[in-house]
Every structure is written in structure tokens, then in C-alpha cells.
Image 1 (cartoon, rainbow, N blue to C red):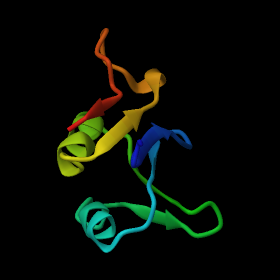
Image 2: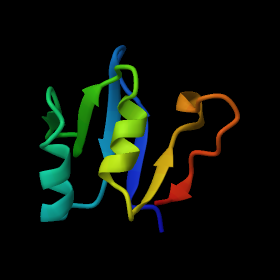
Image 3: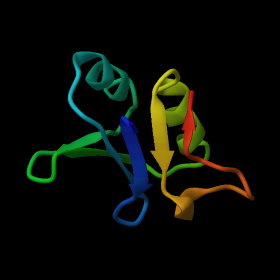
Image 4: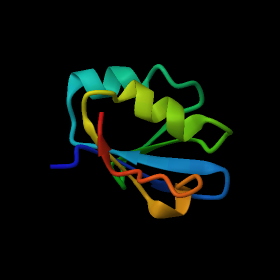
Length: 81
């Protein structure tokens, strides 16, 4: 079961969505410039260079699904880390 979803959001932002857990919230709070969207129940972070890789490292050990639109080269982004 995928626990963390990463997909494009508004221009310049990435949507990061996951089921609530104190550990995941603490992890995402370590990312500067993150925003919580209460009505939508997700967080956004800057879509800056290297951010997808940073999020993958941040959620290492969990199954993360990255939208194919964010894929770099021919990498497969759905992975368990």
C-alpha cells in the first residue's frame, strides 16, 4: 500500500499527501516553506531542483508514489524505500 503520494500542484509547488502519523508530520515539517492545506488535507512544498529526491530520502522506508509527470529520465518512481 502506498503511503506517500507526490504530485504536481500549483505552478512551482508539489503536493505531498499521506495518511496522518506524527512521524510523517514531523518529517514534512523539516522542509522549509511547506504549507498545510486544511480543506484539501495535503501539504505543498516548493518544486525546486532536487525536491523530489529530497522527499524520497525523507520518507525512506515507506512506499512512495511519485506522479509520472515528475519522473526524471526513464526512472520508475513508484518504489519502496
